[in-house]
Length: 175
Image (tube, rainbow, N blue to C red):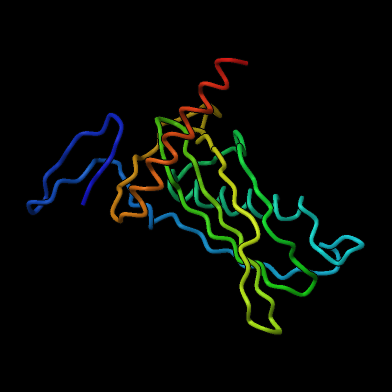
């Protein structure tokens, strides 16, 4: 098992190296399901993009709160791609996972799939990367646990998120 952490002390327990104050990615993953109702749709019978955005923000916030055990605020959604339409009566499944952590913030990836309940077909409809900041009781940013990278997917997502973070920080410095 590969472990990645920031400013964490190493401990050995039963011959296994672990990070103090770290959590595995799996401990904060979210699966959220919504039914597309008429009030969610436009005149074409497809869901409003803003509704999907809201559901993404909620699923991502839950994952961030589970990881940090703190209240969190959305700092940014730096990429949101709508891939396919979602129709009235379809089921929307959102999967959110913490991809990367720094001292007080974390990136959460969200994948949105839609299911046509009449045919059972599943469609990838959107993906997003959200950054959240954990807040302490004083309303200020507070430290969060690091991530334990257990699977190859965890490692790949962490490395990709780290590169996206570097780009976000460069863009922020240049603006």
